[in-house]
Length: 360
Image (tube, rainbow, N blue to C red; front, side):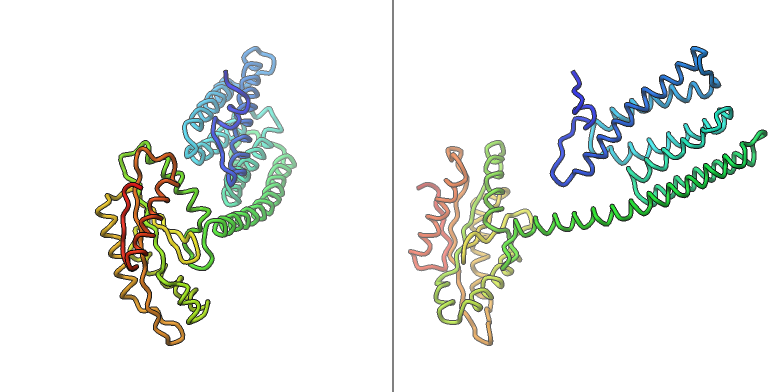
């Protein structure tokens, strides 16, 4: 049984930043429903002889209702169908109102239906599209009146066109302001997301977001043939850097080193600062031998890099611990524990080394 929420939202689930889209889908499906009921009712009244229209208009009304049903089900197939659905819906409505203008001359208020078209264009599309349909509607009315054998009263045509201009002007101002507000909200969301996921010093992923990603990749590894690999990276004797050159020099080293490592890693890899001088590299598309080679490459790049702060050359090396996913791991912490053990081994064996622990 089709629930009301399932109908108005087309069965979609929406993210927190899709509030406007959620509203538009709900409003569109509501308009579909009202339009189907209304056009079917008026067409049936005409067929019954209660409020007669021309046969052409009866067919147009029934066709409009049928197309609205098709549009609803087309939209339900995929969220990405929304732009196409809206464009088709606006085009069909323009043709329906144009047909009414031409073939229902007995209705002196039929030009008002174009107001609905303008409203829909502004709400569902944009200020530019709204202006386009405003001009198209006014142009259609003027051309019809010039060519019609029995044109409508001048006062009716003037009132309809002036009303369209006023309505369009109000909607244009509102839509532009709303678009600016929506844009500022989007920028604010991006900034908040950036602050919530990024380490402010090194511009790498922070530990909180790294934890989320690692848990997601761990869950995916249970159903994938790709192995999940973790490389922990720690700067050797970093405390000595702070004590000798100062904490600003330490910050400089952290920033510079993160840039060096970024040059060696692929965008698909997850690189994060997870502690003071500790970083993590998470990979889900690599064999263990490839991971060891990558780690050695990174270690060598850092070792030969020149870290200069206030003309002082600071020698920096890193130690690295590697671990990979095993089917008997219960959660990501099992991999992290092994990688941490491998890192400890590298430190214990003299530093500036890469160590791998398969099992504890």
